[in-house]
Image (cartoon, rainbow, N blue to C red; front, side, top):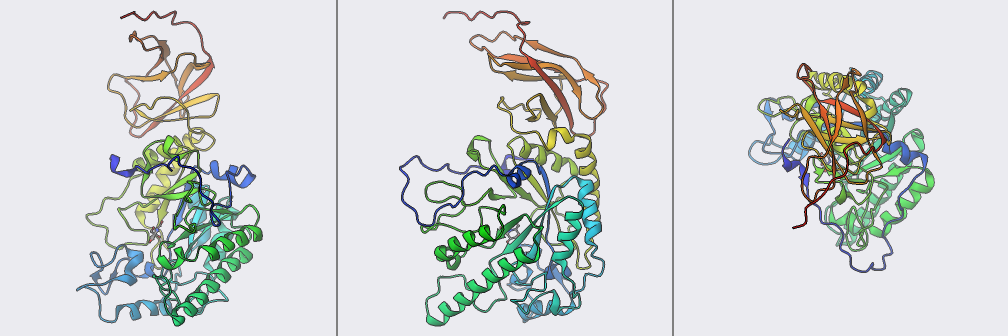
Length: 481
Ligand code: FHN
């Protein structure tokens, strides 16, 4: 992975807080729901909708270059776009019939992969609802499918012990009142008010119909019309929280009266967790400011919905995802891997493979993933550090050529490694504390030997048991200069 995955986000300035009427409504939560969130570790995203029928092309013509991603194909424009395209797309509901969609099979696969939550697209930007919404005539009910797919997913995943978050796009290409700009005429204002009431009604409907859902994952909240509606969205957030105590809402729902999104103008998170890490990762733990977060990640470069032709596009491997997962965990985040089933509801062969291999790795190394968190030690180039208080885990993704994994502990550390072993096999590894003799460096170094005969084709985890720091390395003397 390259550093281009990392994002440098400016931390809020240290200027005096300003009075805000529509700033954050929450401070860091420690209730049971958020504690579960912190232990999810791995999640699954599922993008499924009308666009899944097409897979990024129509009648053999690819939309690549004419639309941003397969789930954006309705916005296809330019020379390759078919005549009357949007009308054609909008009628796809007439042929939407995912006969092979078996939510229980999806959920079993997600369970085997080790996912502890799923985020499911209830309504993407095209406005098509995957539940029979009473507030729309553009839903599964108006298609040959006729099934409540949101209900099937909520029930199936909940039965497997996987928490469900409902993805909901505010941006809606189907609703006649939706507009991107701030409404300027009476007709626009009336249409926009209709749209706001429809959005509110659908969200309350989702909470009422699916009480098992634990969170709402918002998208499409960047247009000027929504940003200007801060009074409405502030009230709606309060209403959603009152309707479902314990509900988790990410930071992408609304903004304050100055248009500040994700974080209000005083730098406070506008939700229960930071939701801005889409196909990117924080550069370091410090920049997260102690906020909860997740990273949503595609398997291909930028396709959330199914893409029929992936030739020439790098597809992340299970090894890539292990690396990303443990990088997230080392900074207390969850990794959410996106799956885009085809129009019949089938996962792709590559997704099946990812689920199997990632799942096998996670199962063998679960202790380092779920209940383990960030540890305040220097990074090692060999991989990612997590810990659970009694144990330190090093996920080795870059095996040192010397056969020695060296970790640096600050002087005065109360607990130091006393033994080491491979987490998956239990094989003991030699470990020793070393004063490497750097002048003015009062740190202690811990060297773990990785046996030359260890055959490893994938990342492996070294588990170090921590015990009372011993004085075994003796006193160090720094020179006066
Ligand atoms: O435009 C969407 C995109 O299609 C996809 O749903 C992703 C998932 O996080 N969100 C949006 C872009 O931020």
